[in-house]
Length: 253
Image (cartoon, rainbow, N blue to C red; front, side, top):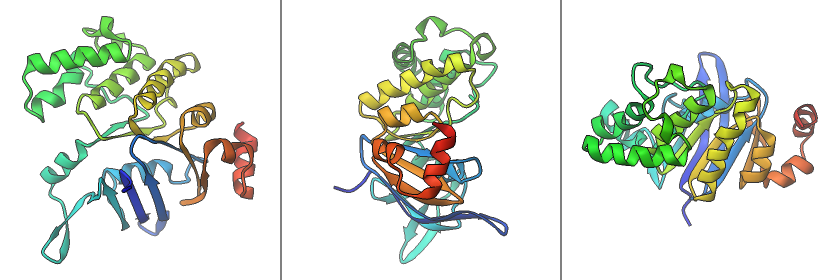
C-alpha cells in the first residue's frame, strides 16, 4: 500500500550550514509518527519542509503519491506557484509552538476564517462545523472569547480546531506543548490522543516521551540532521540500538 507521506533523500541547507542530510521517512495513513531529538537536530526544519514553509535544497516529498511543492510540465519539474502551493497545503494542517491566533478575532472567528475565505463556505456552514470542532477540543463555551482571554492550553486547542477546520489529510505538530505551563500540557495532549484514536494521520515533533510511547506507531530519533534510529516507540525507548540514542534518552527519561 502506498504510504500517505513519503520523504526521499530530503536535504536542507541554510548557506553553508546543512541542517537536514538525506532524510528518508514514510508515514502510513492513520499512523502517528513522533520525531524526537536534541535542540538543533533538524526536527522542526524537517516538519516545515513537509509543507514547503521551508523549501528543501534537494530530495522529494510525496503526499498521497503527488509531489509536494513541485509539478511536472512536460519532462520538466517546476516549483509550484504560490496559489498552487496554497491549494496543496490545505491537505496538511499545521500546529506551531506558538499559537498564532488572530488576536482581534474570537475563537469561533479564528476557526471559520479559512473555510469561508479559502474554501468559499457559507458563514453559517462554517460556523456549524466550528462549533463541532470546539466541542471536540472542549471549548464550546469559549467560542466568543478572544485569545487574550484564553489560557495557553486553550489557545493551542483553538489552533488545533482551526487546522482541523480545513479537513486536512495530514496533521503536523511542531512541539505543540513546549510553550505551555506544565499543568496545561495534558489538555492539549488529550486532544491529540483523541485525534490519534479517530485515525488522524499525524507527524509530531515532541519532547513528550510518554505521549510518544503510548500514542505513536513510529518513533524517529534525529541528531545532527540525520535519522539516527527509528522503529516501534516501545522498542526504541526501552532498548535503543544506537549509542547516541541511549545517551539522549538517559538525559530525558
